Length: 322
Ligand code: NCD
Ligand code: ZN
Image (cartoon, rainbow, N blue to C red; front, side, top):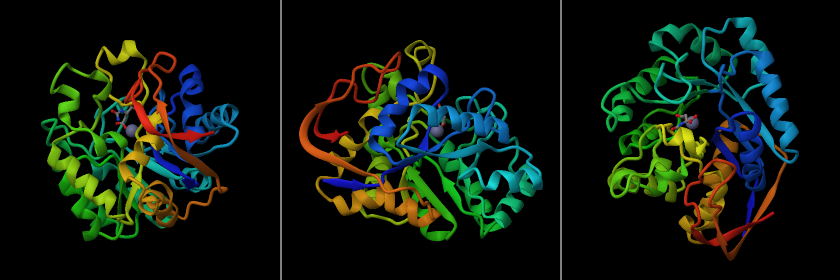
């Protein structure tokens, strides 16, 4: 089967050696990806953005990085300049996940920025979790999404890495809300993380939840819902950091083989989820790139540099031809 212009709407590439190790896997499977800005220090100004983009383009020749910047108190001039260079601005509640210490401390504090983003048509990408009990954090954040959707009706808001069933109901309630779904929230449950031997490689934020949540996410994705887009949230951490508790699943190497199995030959819905919905919802114009997937056994890598991928060593029924 041929998949046309796959786009990963949520990707962590890091910098330096890790970037060099992980980026070829995304370049091999995707035409473009939305690159997250939670580096140290964060990508939150034009200079840092341009140098990060240059580093990515030096490593990947056949790939378009769609850049995000980290939310802060941008002024009008900064936003007008950034508008031409970015896909969206990413809002992290302070301290909610990896490298988010400099995030937002109260949503109202960024209302002036959101007002300008709405006017300049810059999308908002949100890590939607409260600081409550870990299994309830996304559900507790729902009123914040609703308030944002109502207060900024023309601002396009992406609920990233949806892991809780109830969040999906918001998509039909508010025109301006969209969602990304990861491979791990689509396929796994908390049992895969902590139901047997602890698997730190599947520990991530938001935490992977119940079978009921996973089944609802699967139904939404299989329905071909126009506002649901693939965003891997592939988040590589070296083994030594993983064992210290770093959150993030490194799924990049296995995405298309795993999704080809999930969609079981329903190429039309696969194509919408992996590309068309994103391109239509956000007018993303990137050069066409056809990716061929064949029915042939393929083993996922056991290790990439110092990072253990999702489904390490698993044999898939599908293989990406590069
Ligand atoms: C991400 C990371 O490691 O950068 N971690 C994660 O668990 N998903 C950050 C994020 O998207 O939350
Ligand atoms: Zn992420």
